[in-house]
Structures are given as structure tokens and as C-alpha cells.
Length: 278
Ligand SMILES: NC(=O)c1ccc[n+]([C@@H]2O[C@H](COP(=O)([O-])OP(=O)(O)OC[C@H]3O[C@@H](n4cnc5c(N)ncnc54)[C@H](OP(=O)(O)O)[C@@H]3O)[C@@H](O)[C@H]2O)c1
Image 1 (cartoon, protein in one colour):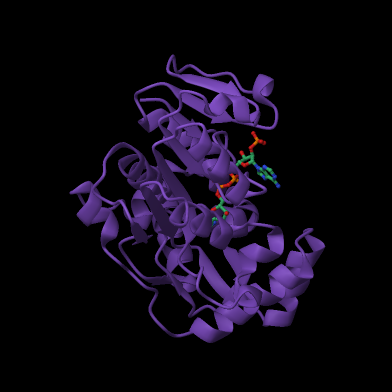
Image 2 (spheres, protein in one colour):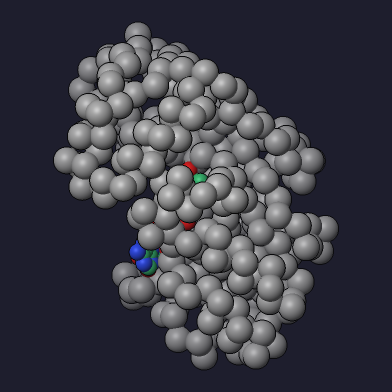
């Protein structure tokens, strides 16, 4: 079985190509920039000719500009299975989905595989655990106070390794075929609690200091993020503040073991928070 993995150099794709044991073609815009210590992985460009002989395709919604065209080519090339990464909020109004304002096409990736006429799975992911490092690692490296909006907004952080394992399961078995599988982390924690958990693992007295949404929006825009993304994110926080995050338990059911917890994730990813190699 040969699997073609789009987004194969990214956060999810890196774990996924490692988990797959058969031949893997990992697509990159710059395949020559990526070395691998894995004998079964070859980095390739996005030439459709690479679909020849492929048995299963992973459609990454950030890396694939036109999922419908890719899936049609895959079908014509005889690919037997298509799996998309999507998002838990994919049915929300597009204007309310922050990731769409950064160009991610989760809805299109899901629709392309679901309408492919081939066996398909869409893996709808909840908030990645790594978002906490993206948002807070810089502040945590320079002090014990994390300034951010909506202290009582809760997430159920999903370990990207668990997400990749569910995707690998979807690609290599038929047990999830035809499903939109909603995967989240195992626990709902507010922003304030997440920072306290990171502090517990690092043995530091970290605390969350709430700032007004307008101020947080300004920080995100000055950091280079699109204003529409920042506004959609603040609106998401405003809608969900004070509510528990959705916890689906699907990782446990599919992988037949407990999902990795947020403290597990932090313990395995201290590097961004300490500035030292993990
Ligand atoms: N973060 C979350 O909480 C969350 C939750 C649910 C769903 N999602 C969705 O998950 C996806 C992100 O997954 P990820 O973190 O694995 O992505 P990623 O690491 O940012 O990107 C995956 C790969 O795609 C390529 N890529 C990146 N930006 C690109 C662009 N603008 N055009 C073409 N190729 C690009 C890069 O490969 P090369 O440079 O090698 O070409 C990159 O390594 C998004 O669709 C997001 O909406 C995220």
C-alpha cells in the first residue's frame, strides 16, 4: 500500500508519515529541502504524476489549493481511498471560522473527499495542543505572566500525535469509512487553567492575566495575522466564554487507548516554553 500525504512536512504530516509503515510519498513545495531518516518516506513535489500506483491519499486543507481537482485526479489515477483533515467548527458560518481567514480550506477538503465516489473519511480536529505554544511560548520564555483575552474560554487540546494516529487509522483500515469523525483532546481546560498546567509541568508559578479583546486583537495584527482572523478568533472566544469545550472521546474509541492529556503534551514539548532543545 502506497500513501500520498499532502502537507507531509507539516505539524500533522510529520507525525503521520512516521506512523505509516508502507511506502509514503510526502508532498512538499520544496521536496529537496527535506531530508528523512525514514526509509519508507520519499519527499515529492505536487506533480499529479505521483498519484500513479498510490492506494490512499491524505488531503491537507492548508497544503492543497484545490482539493476537488486533486481528488478527481486521484480517482482517475485509480487511488482507492481518500482521507481529509478538517475541523470541528467546519459547519459554522465561514465568517466565524478563524482559519478560513488564513486561507485554510477545511470545508472544501471535506466536501471533496465526501463527494469523491471513493471510500472516504473526514477527520474533524478540535484545537491542537500546539496552539498553546504558538500563542504563549514567547511570553512564558520571558516571564511568569501570560497576557491574553477571555481567561474563562475553554479548549480541549488535541495532541497532534493522536490526531495523526487517527488519520493513519482512517487511511489504512475501513473502520471509519464514510464518517466525519470529530476528534478532540480528553479534557476541557480554560485558558487560565492551561497556563497553570504548563506552569505545573515547568515548575513555574505561571498565571494568566486577562486583557481586553481589542488589545489582544491589536497584538495579533501587529504579529502579522490578518485582522479578519483576529476578529473571528475574538468572536469565537466571546461566544464560548464560560462554557466547557466539546470532548468527544473519539480518540480513545478509535485507538482503543486513552487520548494523550494536555500535561502529557506539555511534558513532551517543553522546548518552546523554555527555549532549550526538548
Ligand atoms: N491548529 C488547530 O487548532 C486546528 C484545528 C483543527 C483543524 N486545523 C486545520 O489543520 C490545518 C493545519 O494543519 P498543520 O498544522 O499540519 O499545517 P502546517 O504544518 O501549517 O502546514 C502543512 C504543510 O503545508 C504546507 N503549507 C503550509 N502553508 C501553505 C500554503 N499557504 N500553501 C501551500 N502549502 C502550504 C507546508 O509544506 P511545504 O512547505 O513543505 O510545502 C506545511 O509543512 C489547517 O487546515 C487548519 O485549519 C487546525
